[in-house]
Image 1 (cartoon, rainbow, N blue to C red):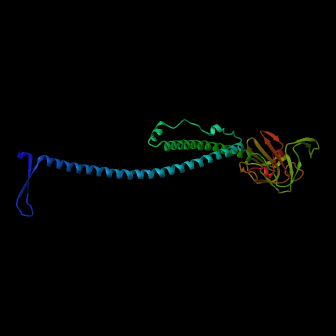
Image 2 (cartoon, one colour):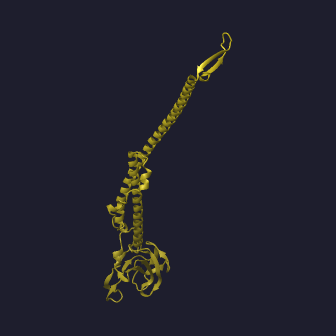
Image 3 (cartoon, rainbow, N blue to C red):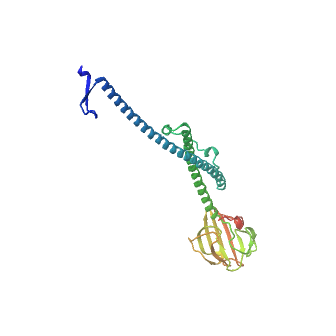
Length: 309
């Protein structure tokens, strides 16, 4: 029987004598088990509570971060919309620019620069997002990708326009387009005329501009001097090659101001009006030669407003 009980000794405060208490083992085991259970349960609840507090804190932090990210997403969407309007404006501008450059217009279908959908890896990377945010992100990605392709297309188009305009500018600058003298009048035109020395009908291959002695003679286009010297009946003469098949000739000068091989620009003074060679008065004999054939120089004389530098 004694194995079924625990004996506890204690001394009461009143009489100070030693006392004993016998308690059944099952009661002791029950009390101890209950205490252990209560302590364990309390510990588990405290751990869960702490974990719940931490989780709530993390959720609150994540929610704040998500709110910030959604705000950023809204800002990006606004920026993309602004860029789309700018890209469309650029295409409208390019239509005019390509027209001026004498280039074909870019078709509207081409400006859409369509391609296939996004890659599977990219879609899978967004799978953790909610449906709305994932959808908005995918649309933004597609819009940005499209804008990038359109920007690349516009860059290529602008380069083509610049190349063509540069080419056209060189062609314009190498085409005779101004009077060879700033003042004076046309005393003899291109075509058949009465030769002032023989009195017979002959063909005049240029235009004579009557001007005062020493009046500056201008290069009528950009080019390279191919001849500068005395030339039999023409007297002191300058000849300039302009490229694109154009050559101009300035004869009967009093003084030459350029040398062979020298590069000149339209409007540069190359000589002074005189009456050298076979000439009856001070003037400049001006010729325009295109592809080896002499042309009427007056067709290549534009007004100041018509000359494009």
